[in-house]
Amino acid sequence: MKRFSERILAVAAAALAAFSLTSCGNGTSGSGSASSAGGDSANKDKPVCWFNRQPSNSVTGELDVNALNFNDKTYYVGVDAEQGAELQGTMILDYIKAHESDIDRNGDGIVGYVLAIGDVGHNDSISRTRGVRKALGTAVEQNGEIDSAPVGTNTDGSAADVTDGTVDSLTIREIASTEMKNAAGATWDAATAGTSISNWASSFGDQIDLVISNNDGMGMAMFTAWSKDNHVPTFGYDANSDAVAAIAEGYTGTISQHADVQAYLTLRVLRNALDGADMDNGIGKADEAGNVLSSDVYRYSADERSYYALNEAVTVDNYQNFTDSSRVYDAASHQLDDNAHPTKRVWLDIYNAQDNFLSYTYLPLLQNYDDLLNLDVEYIAGDGQTEANTTNRLSDPSAYDAFAFNMVKTDNAASYTSLLSRD
Ligand code: BGC
Ligand code: CA
Image (cartoon, rainbow, N blue to C red; front, side):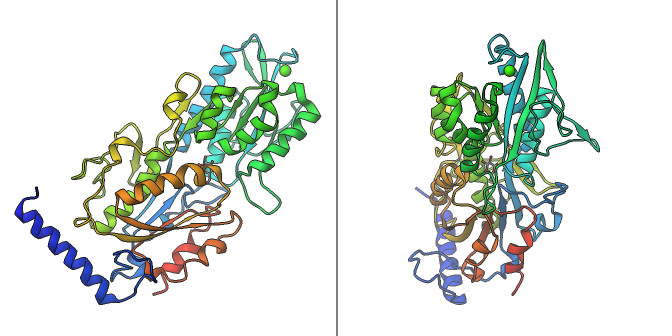
């Protein structure tokens, strides 16, 4: 039972919410919810969360500081790309070491791997390519950074963007890598990866000893098309449910980027900003419902205004703990009180409806958390090709209280912020 003062407060909060709904009068065109429909803030002052694609220069990787500081309620939520990349590289290296006697399928002394690259301009993809090359000794440095360019084909070891590595008596060679972009321009494209592995296998089949991918969407396409039947170890990233299930059938390993934590943070930073609450509420310290994250699943960089989820390797040893990728993080699954945290409207886009990670892992998680956090979220799915496909569907930003943006290209933050700066 609530104490009297708390009840007064709750009643007052509810009255205030009702007032802002009627006073500003920009209704939500029949959503039927009791949401506040934009409140009375100017669009440029509303909370913004960039997620999964960090505003940054797709060539240099330099962060887009303007976009990250669009207003004082702007944040980024994503994965700690480097920690995850290092983990993926180490997982693959450990596998090679443990299988030195049988990994070289054609006995030529070379462990040949093929690499599916997601998006040459996406910092998660760049980090993962670098992490694999670094761990396997195939990295070449340029201006102090590991070259992350695709090699195309490199069966003879002559490519300039990589070098041969060694693990004990074995040579490690990146025999092929390419960006998996389809004809229409969509990146991280699983279907393209499925076609590529079939082409690679018919050109140099038994030289391929390992299949490596920047994500599970592409990794699973290659596993299904070729490596499963040919018993060639295959590694991905994301720990999507289908990939975790495939570990029982020979998919060798993946990385959990803690989508359960990222999806929570994506909506939680908006909730806190909307409530005018301490930003650490329900994140580093427990909120009144008991929601809190443990410090080993995320880190916050105040300089970058970015929350980064930490990664975990998933292999045959522990995959049973990761079978349901849409399961919410236990300690952040408590319902917020709807008097203290009245329903607010959020516009959120996913850059590409076909992206396995975002559509089949991240989106179901968001949908689980939105109810818990009393957020009425409008989910928009893009075509993965043009920013306009999603931005065109944000014709009336004043109908929303907060925004979460997932860009097609990390350079394009202004396509979104310009919509909020008009009033
Ligand atoms: C995921 C990929 C996904 C990409 C989309 C990455 O973090 O690992 O699977 O395609 O985000 O931006
Ligand atoms: Ca070989």
